[in-house]
Image (cartoon, rainbow, N blue to C red; front, top):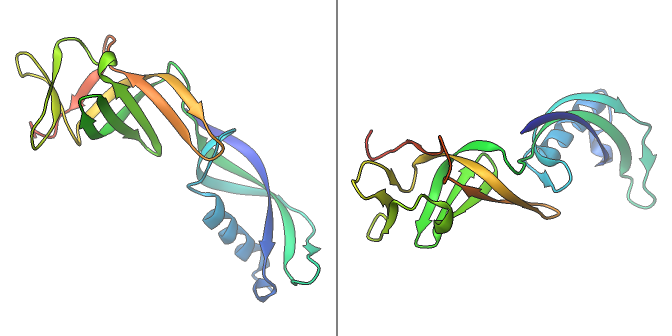
Length: 176
């Protein structure tokens, strides 16, 4: 799920960036430092959408760096239990498969894959139905349901299932 939230961060800036473009330099450093990162509490920061406030800078003793408190708006992505996502399969093995939905990696165990699908080993490992009509392999697009998440300080891991109505392969690269 995507959320638009307000976060705060203390930004350190080298004195060489002071001058007329101080605000632009702070904003570009903020975007470079924050976009694409993950905090376990808020999720993955997708994009900084605006700056609400830049506080007064404090000079760091001995270094000349200045620390500015910055309050900014951003879009974050945080998956939740029960959420339905579309993801791209990145790896298939006999234990199940891994898929990615944006920055989140999701594991789907073979126990959470429909019973009529069998693992096929070979140069392109996959899960195939008994009649061969549906195949899950690398680069397949699947719709899955998140049944569990684990949040670390800098990463979010998910467990998913395709053993439910309207879940499974939505686009197979082998048929294109």
